Image (cartoon, rainbow, N blue to C red; front, side, top):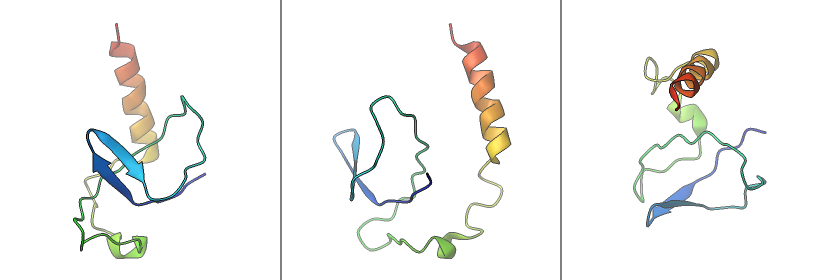
Length: 73
């Protein structure tokens, strides 16, 4: 399931604006796009190209996580 939700960050935690259907222990990918009160948009099409060259592909992300796991004690 892929879903984009708005969240508020307070006291070290993210509070989503709507319920998320995940169970304790599930791992999720969190992308932080600072928006302030006025800059938040739920129109993901307006973000097209905004992160070009800054984000890895899914396969690169998975390979990086595998490398991190190998380095864990």
